[in-house]
Image (cartoon, rainbow, N blue to C red; front, side, top):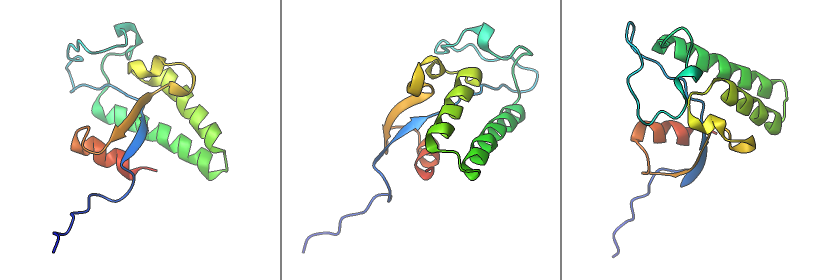
Length: 126
């Protein structure tokens, strides 16, 4: 008898990921030097580093704005355009500089390719 195959997580095996990055630092500290940072210092928050609670508050406000658009019947295209605009204006990642529909795009991601918490969050979204 053949051994039973272990089924992996249900759902898609790969997804396309887009994001809006808000950097934050501990209270009283500056952003750590980040050689991988792709946006210049002049594009970072003017009042110094934002605290985690501020970044979270801002991200939740952006999410609520997009969800409200869905609730009032905006098309997926309109919501996607609103996300791109928010990303271009507020994201602190180089992906925000990509033109058009690639703004904020991290590309395709498969299970096991990234850290577990990020994978879990990304794959549970619609």
